[in-house]
Image (cartoon, rainbow, N blue to C red):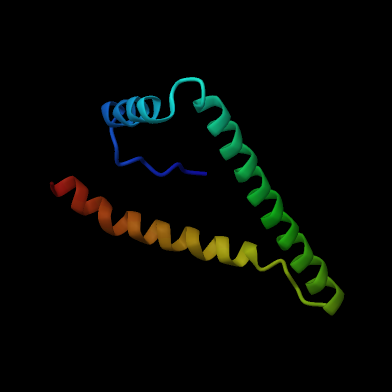
Length: 93
């Protein structure tokens, strides 16, 4: 899986952290981070539960849910086409 690049630099991240420390204080930041982590975990668990429920419901109805392989293949074909087209453009620049 590819990570999307952040469009902020290290200095900007440092500045944001400095502002957070100034606003909330150094003793509150771990509690805030823990709360954010718990919230993100709850959202992830909820989305996994929804996915599994949809999967079970589709299997009960006899619907084929193994279409992701076809979609992944099409995505790979499009990526190859884009790389083929942009490859010559990159070399000319």
